[in-house]
Length: 191
Length: 111
Image 1: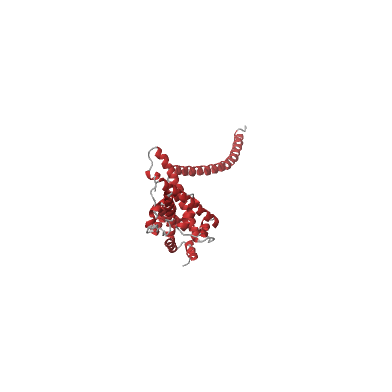
Image 2 (image 1 turned 90 degrees about the horizontal axis):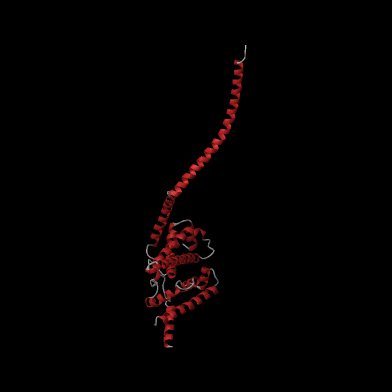
């Protein structure tokens, strides 16, 4: 079954088609979510949210863009919404800490190890992920899609609805910012 | 100088640490968990509706609304009927009073 057929069947509410969709795209959705939110449980929740939204709103998919582009947009929007909520919680946690009842985790996030990273690169990658968390959203998305989803610049441009030149600029600025953050980190910690 | 080179090397290593990474795999039984969650969402939408209706404030407001509508309907009907009845009543009262007057007149006729 090809993709347009699968989408038509999904729009008709076919459960088998939904099963196929989940089988085919679950790793892409999960990998994108985990690369942005940097937490396995949260990425799992986002993955479920994404597929539920796809099931509910597939009828609105007109085929003007690629299905993968549409799906990436849903994942990224959910992941960014999640991060915003988490930031609000952190702020609330900080206020609570002033009264002595904050959770430790809110102030000191755990180190994140992406499950797909090669063993020998894990330590360095954990430092890179910390630096990535400080990037502005657009740079983080462009860099993540480029590095962890190995997407072409044209596809990233379609997903982010910007020009290819803008994508190249975002990736270059992301690399520059990461280089600076990592350099400061290694200098401060006397490596 | 040597330290700067060392830091630059570490930085570049970190920047390239994502090269060759594979996709992280979703946790197992995703479809089962999705189905369970969608089923729960369906059930809970009915639960939420029932819970909303059974809230004291909502129930009281509903009750007031029903009583209010009933009161309006009754008052409209009552107002319509009283007008009709009173016209008929006036007519019959007038007729009766004239009859009585006529009868009294008969009784008061002196021989």
